Image (cartoon, rainbow, N blue to C red):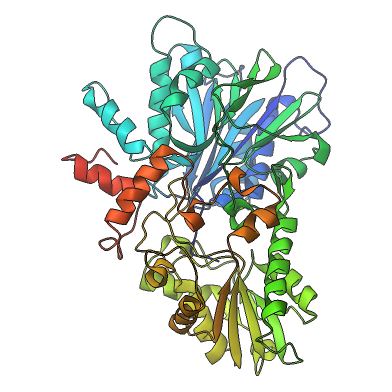
Length: 539
């Protein structure tokens, strides 16, 4: 599904000083462990392809911490296809510690100044730090307005990252030498929303933190002298850590490295656990394990749920003309599991062009054209077939309409029965997913004020899409598939029940404006900020 995008992914690595060299080090040794960072970012590239960057620490150079960031994929930003240029970058930014970031913007602009990490220069070393963030603050407007009430403060960008950096910096003002952990403890009670973050300062101190709800994932591992952390476990496994060495950071907790010592601290009282269910459904790398639950297994469970419903209803013939076709790539595990349980083939009838560029930044007619370019139907697989088209979710429906049309016209499919491995998306996300208004969503147009999905609604949706039938999974299937109690998940986009006060507040604004935002784009609170202030502080 190509209509939905996550905001960011984070990573960190540190070779602890005065210890035996880790066997996971690059050939250049512990003082250039930063060379591992691009590889880690490649493994979480699924979380953001608009920009990338890293900050490294080296006590033996004048710039104790220094940052490289730019627009582009990890491959482009770090010049990985050009050995000479990549090697030059790695030498210039060599360090014993690094934090990294990949970005897709749910806020802000697609220019270099919004790429992360953000670095805050200061003459005092513990106040000179770099910072990267994954998530979204639902009380951004309140924090922004309060900062700007003071004429001494200025925001150069419309982004939560700068807000958080300012709030942490304010905690560090004064003569007292305050650690990053203490500063976060002071600032965190003012944050409402989802966040995982990494920080690195000019003293070589590192911090990795997770919000008190655990909405955004983050894990870490220590093997001998090497510490690493990332949004997803696959980034740690692929640099050499064993599965049993990888730990999930608990909500409201932070890992700190000070004087070469790794410690875990609580920085704020944890709230009710509210892991974002979409991590397992769509966002995370299928090879990752998040909070103890395999992404791949979760998606196969969803496919089995689809199969069970199909068996029970027995409406579509399961004969030699019937096949299952996944929408590449995140739907494949669910589609394969559904086909296996139904005893029919799962075939790759849609081929995704992986080199079509970053088409997700387009909108409207350009998004439709992007979908046409991105997917190619295989007539030799589809012609004359009755297909179950399995998709992980439907948000705006632009891509799905294009696919169904192409499957009929170019693929020659006889019937198309859409099966969605997720309930209907009925409410916006204010925690870091690219959907912030009700008007842009597909399902609410048919469901109205009702949260109960009926047969008539699904028939109307299928007609609008051009499909022969459409069926979603029920809400209860999600908690079962990801093996969590539903009360431990954030399912706001499918239940309209938000785990934080700020999220609930923004949802009420969304309801008030749902008839005015049909053709709108951008984050709701950015528009709200524009309404509340005469001029914008954004870049």
